[in-house]
Length: 452
Image (cartoon, rainbow, N blue to C red):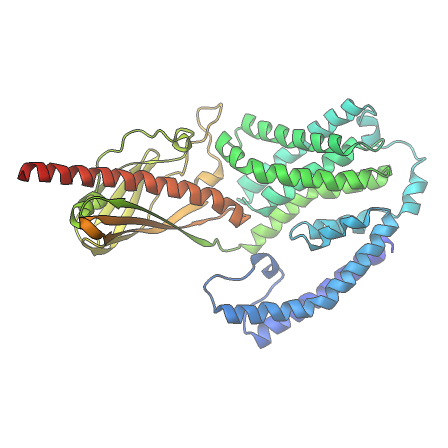
């Protein structure tokens, strides 16, 4: 199947499927549906799990014939291009399947590409050396240089820290670097992976050098970016190992490098709601709830941190003060980057202190070679909404002190970044809870000593 019929049939089937989905969503389930709803996913807490299952189960059943048709057409297209049929797996990968469709819609057939082999060398052919190390060096440098403005476009203009940045870009970086590396002749699998790794490392160094990001954020993003870059290089290896014609190589590289801004634009238009997460931590205190309560409401300065997480730049709590008493009182939990402003919502002494968060400081101080760097994710991308301290009496006069924070973060893939944010907030909880325990137990010992 040629690229023209494949693109035409694919677009026609998508239009038919989307309108069927919209009809079912609107008239059978009474819910809005547009082209960006595929990116948003189920809305949390908006309806019952049974209603969600019925709706998405219906969409899945309707999608089965379209999936079968898409698989059949894509297999025929892969055969026409001469690429491994194993690349069919990309048809089912979210976010990567659309650039994959675009790539197959643009890459010429084997017969057309073979006729172009004898043509005058293209610009890339003259730019990329034929040697192993020369092609690797150009692949690393070229992909990293092109990726920097894509990152700036996403984080500074579109304000997107999403799948386009953390999925599309590293995958495209690895794929494009491998195809560039094998532009003149097929390269080994190991060399393709090495080039992809070096491209990602070079991009990180450039972002640090140009004050786009700091060390901490790059360190957190490294596992997902590195893994997807190697995945992209693996796909690029299978594409280039049969000797990719110049026209097909140029098309593949162009589509790959356009993948990230395309996904960023789609995410920006979709405006996905940020999920709400909960982190709960607890300690047991050898003191009655009433003595623990006074340190929960406000506590003295906590000694400087020894944990590597806080010493690396993550914001940490120092002290807490309060103005007033009861609901409506204003609590300030002071971090090293500024205060959290927490109006009290529930004052149930000595059992429950619950508060909202109306103002919060930056979540970290980035490591950077410059005096100041202010990446957009430091403002508004991780927001605490409310919190509480719960005190439960234990046997022999002890207390279980439990701290909970409800927060949102606007970074995707959400589950990946939740691993980091949950771990950080849990460490913050423990720093506060252990200090409160120390204060309450010291107060109890002093009280017992005075009585004796």
